Amino acid sequence: MKWIGKLTGGLLGAVALGPMGAALGVLLGHQFDEHAEELQARWSGSGNAAAIGERFFRATFRVMGYLAKADGRVSEQEIGAARAVMDELHLDGAQVREAIACFTAGKQPDFDSGGELAALRGACRGRPDLLRVFLEIQVRAALEGNNLEGPVRPLMGRVAASLGVSPLELVHVEAVARIRRGAFRADETPASPAARDRALEAAYRVLGTDAGASDEALAKAYRRQLSRHHPDKLKANGLPESMMAHAKQRTQQIIEAYELVRERRGMT
Image (cartoon, rainbow, N blue to C red; front, side, top):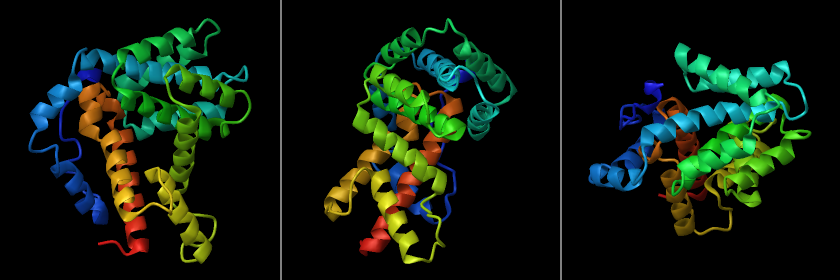
């Protein structure tokens, strides 16, 4: 699985994001360009990033299979949800086969979920953002699989606790995942006041703040979320190349949320 460890920089440097491109350009060009090598060395720290990437990849799909089997069987919808994650991550043939093998291993009665999660947390020690990305992917798959209903919900809580993620943070991860499915749109037409209000509320939740925050606090929350999901940082910390599509999508979601709030507030 050498392909997992191929960590290269600048994934988003040439990606065009339409009207959001300027904001992303600021993100990529601010602190990270001038001192990229220094920052990468600091982020990488001790440990082998390629080895972390391999463990992260395998744990992702093993735990996904484990959660899908929470009620004793894996439905076609849950299998479809796992395959949708593979498709959205743009896995190649070899990666898909490895992911399926890991998913199947996670479904087995003797799968040691506690050991798997403990090993992942140990490998990602000092890299909490990687563990959060891991949880985001699990929540995303579980929502598509069965809407986090039944025994999978308390199991997800145990997964989060094993990774050192608080219940409050898990609530935020789920809320953002649900928002992501709706792309800031409610059931009403986008032009309706109710839809605009819901979109604005959703944007604040993505940024981890609320309408009562000052402009300065909002900007800090935006920078904090961007730093947490910065693809270069996650990659240097060991996020496998195959998972970078998730980081890219989350970064774009954060940028879109900030742009929406700025527009509604009239911020320059």
